Image 1 (cartoon, rainbow, N blue to C red):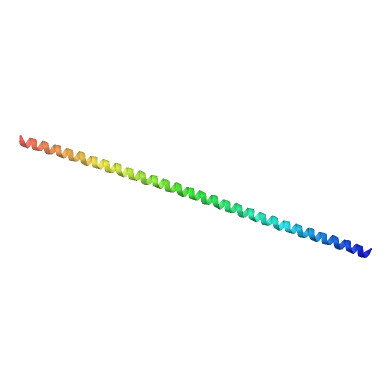
Image 2 (tube, helix red, strand yellow):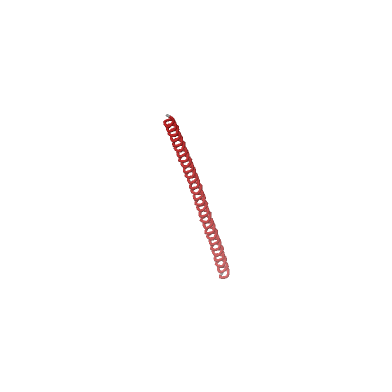
Amino acid sequence: CTSHGLYILLCTSHALYILLCTSHALYILLCTSHALYILLCTSHALYILLCTSHALYILLCTSHGLYILLCTSHALYILLCTSHALYILLCTSHAFYILLCTSHGL
């Protein structure tokens, strides 16, 4: 009876040991999966950050391109106005020359 009781006690303690090991293994598995989940979320967040910064970079480049285009068109407008003003000045001086020649001829 005593040896049978010891046997039952041994089996019970062995079963508790197996249960403890199993729960410990499940705990490790849970922690590992949680760590992988955190790693996945972190990498996803970094990916979103990278995409956002890339989008901001594209937006910056586009706005810079539009600014350059605006400046170029403004410069062409100024050049056109200047050449038009020079043309008017040339025509005016030519008209004065004709007027001067005409009055001198008279």
